[in-house]
Length: 357
Image (cartoon, rainbow, N blue to C red):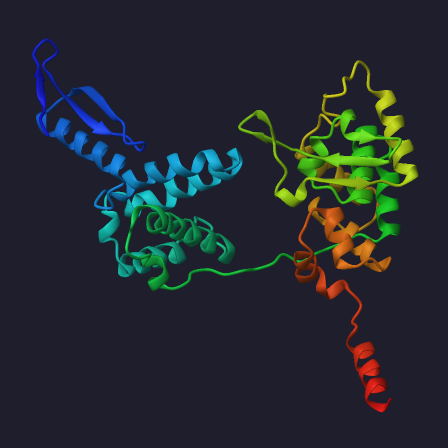
């Protein structure tokens, strides 16, 4: 490696050839360094990134990780990861070399995260602590899978945090009807909640719907996208999972209601979003409608749980429900097992008959 003096600007620069990830020989030039040492350090770091040498600093490998992963993730997913990396990982591990970070370093970081308290004396939740640990582990696993890092120190350090499922609240059909009657004065809210309750769509799927997604002759809704508002910008993305791409059959009355709603919209095109509202608007309407109707408060996502609960009560199987909800059947079984009627007694009685017979 060599650095050169730029006499006109009184700075240093580097100019060198390197091989990119495809094996092509390329030239790189970088100016504006105050000292020769800064120029040489920059070239060294650049070459390490190209070679993905695990002798590099954690903060430099994070840039490699970002280049590899960012194109594969939804924008909002990456923003969440990026925030954790910048605020919780880089301050502690940034200037340590990837191949020199030990389990003991991870344990000390875990202890700091677990002992954190804000001005009100509140610490991080168990779920959030587990999320932090998972992100750190993901970075090291990336180094193992693609760049020949020998081991993941997070695994040796042991776990941090844990699962804590929020209580699953649901509305019965009767509770929902009281709620819907309470918000009928705002058509956008009324028709949006009608779709959510009677189809089980996710909020992002609802907010991405266009008139072209509804086939009134077949009485179906095609779920092919999701809407999110991030940093003041609208984003239409693929649905949550591949299974989420699906066609949902809808009852006759909902077909009629959606036709009524579309008739209210002036100058709408087939590819315009039908519900040009936000999740916070829906949240506000849930509070208003719940209080007005005198029904218990639930979260917006709990309306999806309410739809599943109603389908279980109607006798549909986990496989049937999974297809409608865009889930794997095993997920339905795990998440809603407590809602399915127990078949244990029936099994025992039938086995008894087999034995006697």
